[in-house]
Image (tube, rainbow, N blue to C red; front, side):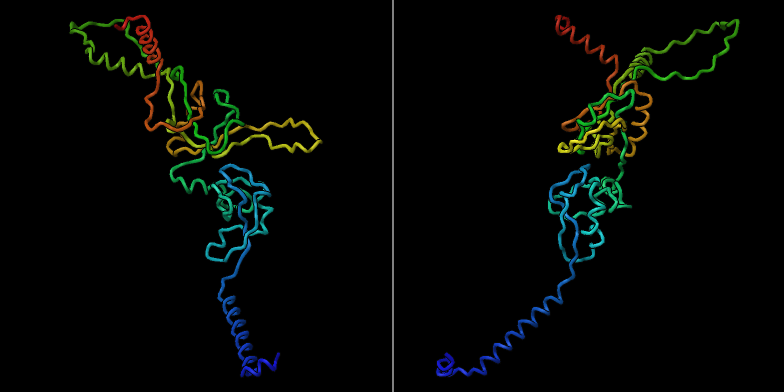
Length: 299
């Protein structure tokens, strides 16, 4: 074989030197490329889409290797997986996306808490709505899911009694002969219209709807394969965490205190216009109009 190569005029020494130079250059280029690559780190990523309020399990997490950059401190390292499992999602996480510390409520994200949600909605607050309040009517807590759109309607039957100071009337009232003034018909009509706007009434506080961020107080999921079942006599308060405008916190708090009924409705989508409120007299006028339409009195 060597004789045949030599007979072709190829110098074996030159061939060997060329091969050596090629190998040396290949190794040097690989080493140079590896030296120029940034260092890598192992971080946690999601194995499925996670919505706001979801409880993170170990199967929802995977370890991914990425290049280390300026945002490396925002990620959760792979070795902190035990501090993430059991946490609550505070910001939507997509399948394969690295998990940021600000996107969850867990031990590994201590210090960020639910500020991730509020950072996306300036001017809003997380309002706890107790479903166990005596004057609140709502579906069962298990009927709600994070992301649902709801409205809160307050029903007031009468105004709170105001403290008044009795006026001392004189024993004798002298008439100076001046004619007593009577309100003009226009003033009477306006006063009557304003009086009809007073309670009883029903008012939608959030016609455009507010989002449910999380549902608290639900019983933990029980593994059906576990045969050792026991009764749990402890009860926790059911509560909805609502994303409400800051200006509505006081309104909603007062509605829970003074409202005879507070009704929580589930919406498909919100209306674009606020409501003027529906009073008892509007209800009475509606019945009168329906009666005229049915009996033909309106023709």
